[in-house]
Image 1: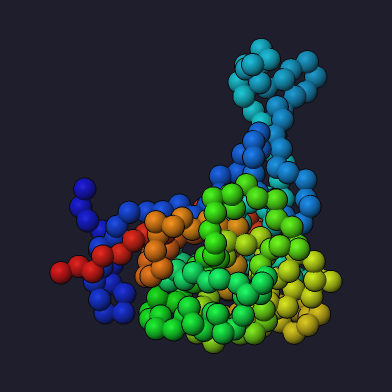
Image 2: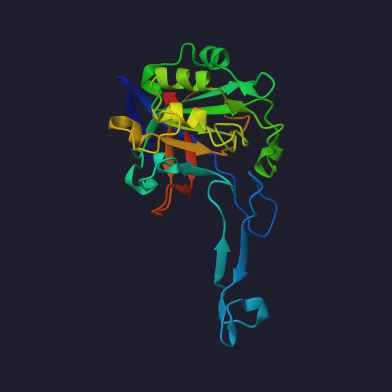
Amino acid sequence: MTAVRVTIGGRAYRLGRATDLSIPLDPHGPQPNAFGAPPATARPYSGDGFTLDTRSGGSCNCEVIEFTPHCNGTHTESVGHLTAERVPLSAVLPDTFLACSVVSVEPHGREITAETVERAAAGLAPDFLDALIVRTLPNPADKATRRWEDATTPYLTPEAMGVVRRIGVTHLLVDLPSLDPLRDGGRLAAHRVFWDLAPGSIAVPAGVARRRTVTEMVFVPDDAPDGRYLLTIQVPRLVSDAAPSRPLLFALDEAS
């Protein structure tokens, strides 16, 4: 297979192995969950005299799957998550490939502070900040099936999100179910800083702000070290403010 080469910031790189950051969503088994939402479920499609399940004598398998993208696994969302105008994610999909950086942070208690983000971002190349992937420490495998509770779930402070904005990130990915506390009285302060929305505003922001995306509940394995990568975020053309997504992270090797 021919090596794939890309040029970022005037430097040539070869694409290395891909790491899938999405958490498999199994409607029949263990799965992550947030906000106390019902788990994702699946049932055979049935009608008058038929059930489409081969185990029950059906001619084929055809499932009806019910889930809530914001609560049941890896998902990407648009500013339409907060605005009166329904801005579908499909209208603001990111470029096919994004130069990105992975950083690891350790919350102070539950807070990911501005100082923590500043330290993690120190020295990051501007050419690799189209997207930023934040891995929280510790990083146990049970994040893939965790029932996230407000009392223990970390979150980014508005000031930390101000740092994210200041360094120019357009697409933010986190391994948490929300940028904000799960129970914050509906303020969603970090979301609002990211999308340039004043407290309580439901108006779509102007300019590039409306094209920013947030991806939540990713899982970044330990064998993907902090550093520079190429990212693509695969999402279905679902006309909604959020959709299940599959971020793929490609290692980069400098080409000679």
